[in-house]
Image 1 (cartoon, rainbow over the protein chains, first blue to last red):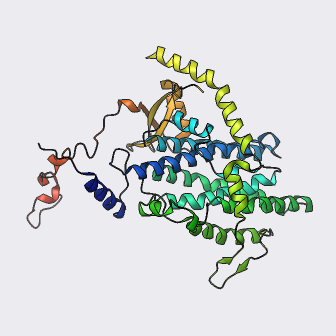
Image 2: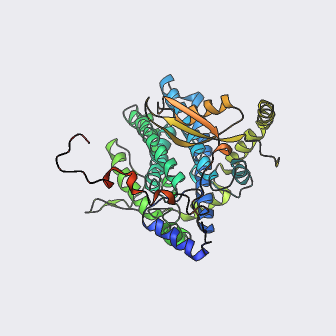
Image 3: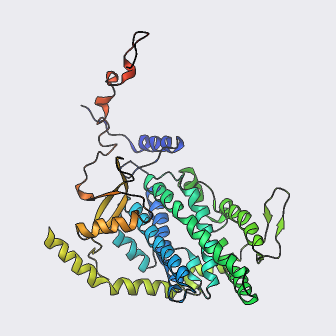
Length: 311
Length: 97
């Protein structure tokens, strides 16, 4: 049997044919190095975001207002940890270990979603985070279910099934507060005021300022651009706010005849400040992750030894 | 920071959604031993009753075919159309076949 070695050019052609034919790329398939690097960056950043995202909500477990809300919050946060694990396992199929991903996070070489660098100040923030932050994440993740990389796509399908509970539990918290006392209503409105813009920032820079978008779209890693996804989120979320009597903090909102909204632009200075490490909680979030990781080192080391003995 | 990887080995997880169904690959987890592997698989992949059965196996023990290195691996199936029932023309009127 004769095996002929294919040239790089032929391999790229086959790869792009597969992508154009909506076939998934699997871990052992040939892929361009740029495709692999883009996925490594995007999936690990996504995984880190799930795990760091447990911190602002973890802050409220012991202060949840009822046993029921505590149980719901715990289940939600456990899901986020699980999502991080699905994503690390998808990212590891690209030939990088989880240990390495965590090291890159600790060294600041790998980022996570900036939105988690804002503080969760009140119980209403648990509502706003579930409704808006998870809501924005779902908008992105529903689109990513069709990403061209098989393991990433399958992780997204699994995550999307679980995320709608997250968004609903958040919206329910907001609804309950809006049906409560005047203080509770004000607290809910205050949470929306603080989380609205950070949620919109989650979609990233404008398409024109996002240099990697073209390649990511061409190779179908991303299926919709940052701006397309952001508009989708805005258009479906504003009516949800109005339904329970909340006011979106944007004085330029205008409902257009096609059912979409005209709105103000994001404060991009703030966006870049937070991305570049100067948000309210950047240092705290990372320091906490490093501390817990280091505190647990002896557990991992002794478990490693035990597993060697078992073999 | 230590340079040794202490995250435990990688295990692949397979879930059977209902009795009688085939086991399907779900993803992977890290664990240090069999017991932890099966428990981590449960906590990670079956939080909503997705499974009635679970398999875990160390990733390094899985044998697989690399598509481009073994281009001809699946070729033996290509010229054996007679393995498919549609290969055979049946006389009109034949029943229960």
